[in-house]
Image (tube, rainbow, N blue to C red; front, side, top):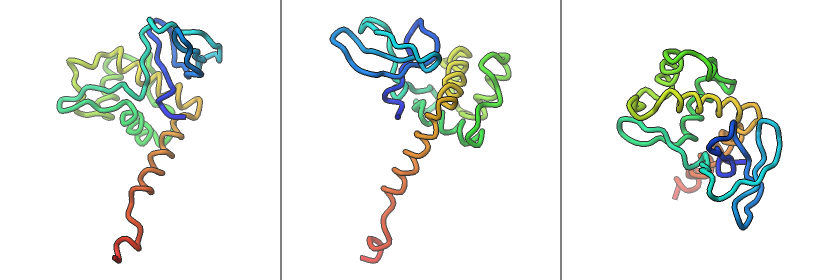
Length: 149
């Protein structure tokens, strides 16, 4: 599963997996309690693959931020909690993304990123991102026969 099917719904806790589209919205399943619910098209729905974090030079896709956290933590959950102090959260995020824009990335955003990372980790969805990344790297490398020609 990729981040294309994982949703954040405004006003609802946690993350959701999109199951199907309907005429009036979507049917989503909570990653927290596995409950299914209909979500109206008028709700504010964000697909994780479309979210990015502001830096001083560019916007970094959330997938890349998750990958950096995954590498820093050696594939484990974060060493900080989304409930830790503001200073601890900002220091941790600075280690992950040293040039993040402190004026546009709020502590509430950092808390969400950490909470979402740990939730995705609990459901083994980060491993899929890592494996997909490695598959893409292997596919893009030239083979040894290409170099000989």
